[in-house]
Length: 124
Image 1 (cartoon, helix red, strand yellow):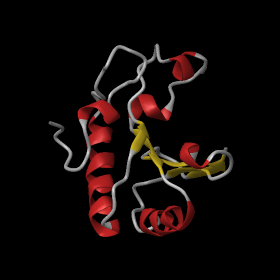
Image 2 (cartoon, rainbow, N blue to C red):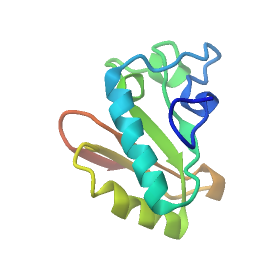
Image 3 (tube, rainbow, N blue to C red):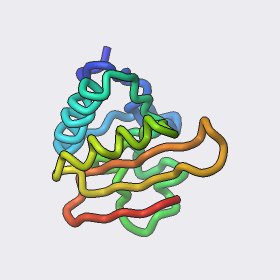
């Protein structure tokens, strides 16, 4: 059982095979906000990518430490639910990293959020 209500350890752990947990205190800050957003939305928020260790295939290609190594999640969401989620995310100034993938296959759309130092927004 995860220490974060509504979310399993499996969906928050690194998916490279190491099954590592995020050791950073910033991740706890992020997840407490995600739980609040989940409660306000009153719908499941599947985490499609949580923690990624430095050896995760995506992180291994980066020249700097990725946000998923610090405190980030990708939430599998699309359509009107993505819009409602975006409105809730905007209410939390701690969530400074915001990436949106809402094109392509329906089941592969997501919203990325993180607690980086400086605000950033992008699309995939």
